[in-house]
Length: 379
Ligand SMILES: Nc1ncnc2c1ncn2[C@@H]1O[C@H](COP(=O)(O)OP(=O)(O)OP(=O)(O)O)[C@@H](O)[C@H]1O
Image 1 (cartoon, rainbow, N blue to C red):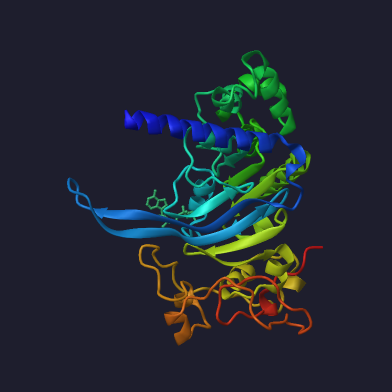
Image 2 (cartoon, rainbow, N blue to C red):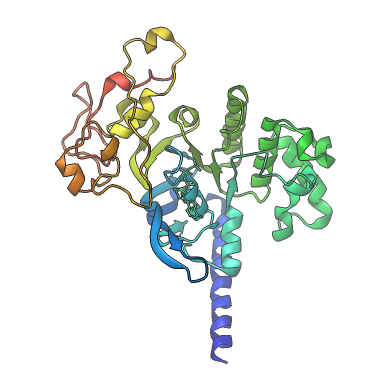
């Protein structure tokens, strides 16, 4: 009796949150360009490590995401960059509610959406969509392109009533630069770049406000990568989308990102505008990544320093004490072993020319610019 009552109460509350979120999403100008529509604070995801087959015992935890905070502003692209295993995909899954966080909060348009269920979750999911990395495995080979792109309408029939679906799917094909007549074809009949366009069309079907793209171009040839990134930039303008764009190297996100966050072992170690990160990086890890960014002009390449990081990323099940990066850092000192650096704007600190104060946060006790590793500014 009591359980039934609380179940009804929960359903009612979910309904209220769902309606609030839908109403806000529909109020076109409720959120102006540049306002934070997503606020992530102290997000943590630990995956338990267990031993034993019958009686499973927890013997530790993989600290995939270990205290991540950032804002995503309306209409912007936030690039998230870092080596394999640093927790980028897990952040993406937490934001899109494919995983539940161990701790921390996610607010969407001011509303706490961290632990939603039922109708409220459905409403949020409609507005925060994911585009996956691998266009070869993320599309069901037995479904036609029309069915793949139209599948989200099964869950949200209010967006496209049955009789209107074919037209909507054809519109989406057109929007992503594919021939609307291909609606009955199967994924294997398309190239890698075209398949990623199909994935993007599917992500757009419910007219979300936020798209979380997890390495959307990493599986594609370099020549095709630029086309897909350009398409995403065009769609962003057309639909006023906000993107979280995940990649493992800095060169991919440079063209599209307004701001970039650099992740290492479950934490953001530096975050700033594209100019701050690409021209005034102060964290040694960001500098190492920047030094590996290829530049086409051999003259510009001359005199640039290449920082080669020793060893692999340590296991997130057993990260180093203090600063997680210290085991691979040439600046590491005793302080780095005992004191974890906070992600803060370094105090009284100016750029390499000594005239501009540095304004962006960097989680390093010895944050400082190193001009010799920066790739030249984009022309
Ligand atoms: N479901 C899970 N169970 C246990 N460990 C997991 C799970 N998902 C991810 N991990 C671990 O969490 C860490 C972070 O993984 P994640 O996939 O988020 O990293 P990533 O930076 O996206 O790497 P990649 O680019 O290789 O996908 C890794 O050590 C990974 O093995």
